[in-house]
Image 1 (tube, rainbow, N blue to C red):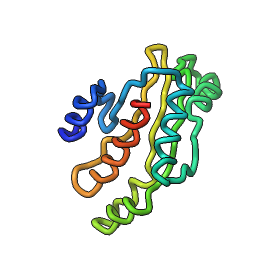
Image 2 (cartoon, helix red, strand yellow):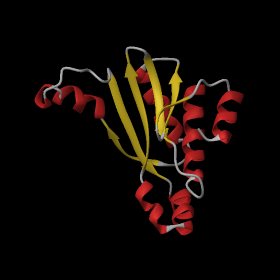
Image 3 (cartoon, one colour):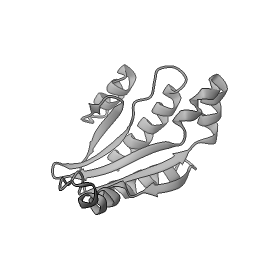
Length: 144
């Protein structure tokens, strides 16, 4: 986990963890619906447009039997997909190949253990600006 994010999270009293290589997980104290509303509001309040809400949890639950699995991964799981013209231009002017990281996503997931908000841990360098944006959005969402 990036030291700046860890310091911010600890300073805000947030319990965070890296769930897997490249993912930052922040527990949400509330319902899945409250978390999705909070994430959506935090994105839109910055003047950003949500391009898509991907219903990944529904798809996984619907298709499990079709692929030979009876494992329920999530009770609910949505991913909010969006972009920032300002931040995207900045990171792509630094390196046009940063386009592979766009658009950005914040996932809200519910398991029997609770609700969490997840985003990618981007590489050091110019992409840190994107991670900072996502960190700020998640921090706002969990504080509401």
